Image (tube, rainbow, N blue to C red; front, top):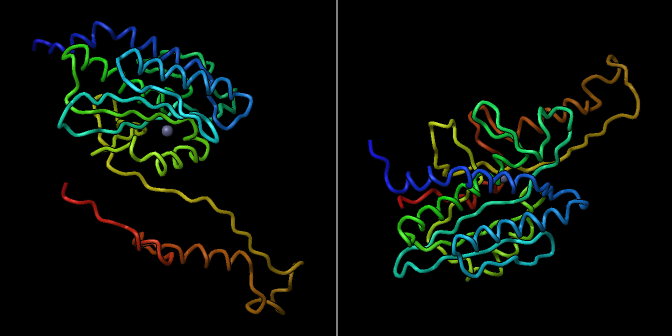
Length: 259
Ligand SMILES: [Zn+2]
């Protein structure tokens, strides 16, 4: 099969694409650790420069209460829909460091995989999309839709800045569809479009009982046992069919539309 012009472009530029990703991966942009604030900024600037290089407009670092957001757009496709693409440039901490086979911020290739902190969450996915946009524009000189890109720096640490920005700058994020580039592929041969992820809530529940051991013959069945009480609480959250019994949880749930 003859490769398409798009495939040819990607093949010709593959090593540069990979080098650009590796350079980004070398920046230890750990959002949870204050000593990496400078690295966070460098990683954000790196992403902004990538967007500028491929010809995006309005590229800027949006200052927030926390780490900066990176925004850029390409809105030249008149009368075409707009896609908002999301990714994040921050990464998780790296401890325990001695479990790494190679240093977390020195990208290493083994068995056709690239190993570094952020390689698959989320610099890899985000860079992949930037290079896909570059390839499309390089070959066709245009994009089939309008594109806005928003890259945040607090995904691994609360994400408050992006939440505030989405609420207050909705005009700049106006779109017909959103593509969240922060998911995975089952395998290299098996790409996937993820349509939803489950949410998560962390909580700590402390149950207190008697101050000292109580004799089972005298108190058993009368004094509440914290372990038993906790088991009852947990077992009531969800039934055997997976239905969640927390009051109000399903109230705001909407079924996906046909579209
Ligand atoms: Zn992620």
